[in-house]
Structure formats: C-alpha cells, structure tokens
Image (cartoon, rainbow, N blue to C red):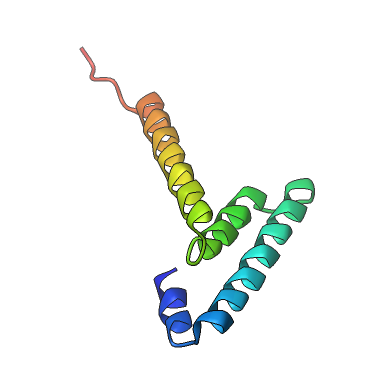
Length: 87
C-alpha cells in the first residue's frame, strides 16, 4: 500500500480522494462478488478496505480491527500446530 500512497501523494487532494474512492469501492464490490463465486473474496475485500483507509478514518479503524483479529487467529492456529516436546 505504501507505493500506492506515494503515487497518490503527488496528486491534488480532490483527484486523490476521487481515485481512492473509485478504486477502493470497485475492489470491495469485486470481493463481494467473489464471495458467492470462486475466488478469494475476503482477501479482496480487505485489500479494497486498505485502499479506502488511505483517505477515510472509519476504514482505517476497521482495517486496524481486522488486522488485530487476523493476528489473534494466526496465533491460535500456531498454538494448535505447535509441536509438543517428547518425554
């Protein structure tokens, strides 16, 4: 996302805002379609939300909560597959 942020930072604010909204919403819609069709729907929705988070505070907060939930899920999965020491 940093490269997109750098590219958009050179544009005037109204143009940057419009491009971010169009791109983010289009990707979220594609993710919603992928939920009912084969494809990585949740991942695409998360990417679209990350793009919207470049300009919108509520998307930034939702993105942060999603990352925290993902970290908890990964920690739980790691604990399940963690090797137990042999006695």
